[in-house]
Each structure stands twice: as structure tokens, then as C-alpha cells.
Image (cartoon, rainbow, N blue to C red; front, side, top):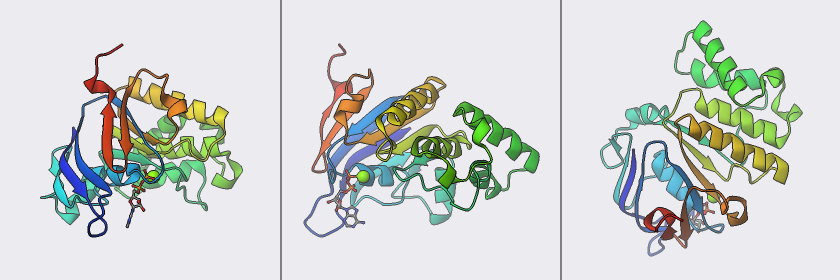
Length: 225
Ligand code: ADP
Ligand code: MG
């Protein structure tokens, strides 16, 4: 599904942002990527959706290899991956419905099909009643749910969530986490980056601890409690 083999990433000479990352994420797994700000979490995610490429080593995602992928194949890869960000990245001049529909319109999905999929996505995040609201009318938690709905509308095999609770109050953050767990139960793998160990440490999922660009621990390599 997702594999990184001996991956180094240097944005600048002699400075490792990521160092010798070896990692496999399997179908349907739920993984937390935990580490302080600047430890390389976002860069690792960018390598997975191929917004950045490794300096050394190989990244393989859904059969696409970073070393071989062609520019025109990248949109095909991106359709298999859902991505959500700390700052939601919704289009401010479109309502919730249209923000989700836009993701399908750009790939030429029929109108009737689009409608069906968008309504299902809105129901999945329990925001059908907010379909006409614009981003500025929604709370942070609601905006993040719309952004998750948009990410899921292509039915990706994995959802990458980069600090998805970073801009949300604690109650909203717990709801987002709960929503990600539900999505995972339905079969979508989740990779969620966070600097907030407290938020995730009691959950029974695999945890990768990243520090200064290196994976310091991986709970899947320890004995299960
Ligand atoms: P995190 O998401 O854990 O906060 P990042 O992956 O954003 O970490 O950043 C890790 C390190 O890489 C930081 O030192 C950051 O300054 C550096 N970095 C990230 N992106 C770039 C870039 N485009 N150019 C140069 N340095 C970068
Ligand atoms: Mg980051």
C-alpha cells in the first residue's frame, strides 16, 4: 500500500529533514505520526502524496514509485489518496456542498453521480443540514468535517490527515478523532500527524514517533499490550 525504503530528504545541502525512513503502512491500518513541530511530519506526508520527492531511497504508494512516476500520473495517484490539512483549505466562495462537489467536477463526474456522492459524504460526516453554509459560517470543527468529506469523495484507500485537530477546540478535536476512527472502521487506512501525544496516546492504534527526521519508535514493532 505505502512503503518508504531508506528514504532521506534534504531540502538543503547537509541538512537532513528526513533520515533513513523505513516504513510500511498496510491496507486499513490506523497510524499516528507523532512528533514535535519541525520533526518532519508534513514532509513525510508530502512524500506520500508525491508533492515532494526523496533525495535518496524509494517511496511506493498504490503501486506508483516516486523514482518512476510521470508528472501526468500524479493526479491518478492523488485520486487514490485523501488529504486533509490543519487549515482546512476550503474554497471560501463556495458552500459546503460545492466544496465537496468541486473535487468530483474536476474529474468529469456526471451531475447525478456527483450529487449522490456529495450527499453521501455529507451524511458520513453528519453535516447534511449544513450543506448550504459557506466556510465562514461554519465552526473550525465543521470546516474540518467538510474537508474530510471532500477528501473521501473519491473513496481513497488512505486518508492522510496533517494536524487535522490543530486549529480546533478540544471538544471539536475529539469529534474529528472519533470521525476518523469511524472512517477507518469502514476500511480506509488513516495516517494522522500530530504534535499532541496527549490527544492520541490512549488510543489503541499504531504510533510512529518522529524526532529530528528519524523514526524513534514504532509501536507495531513492540509486543502488543
Ligand atoms: P513538521 O510537519 O513536523 O512540523 P516539516 O516537515 O514541516 O515538520 O519540517 C521539517 C523540517 O524541514 C523543518 O526544519 C523545516 O523548516 C524544513 N522544511 C520543510 N519544508 C521545507 C522546504 N520547502 N524548504 C526548506 N526546508 C523545509
Ligand atoms: Mg507539519
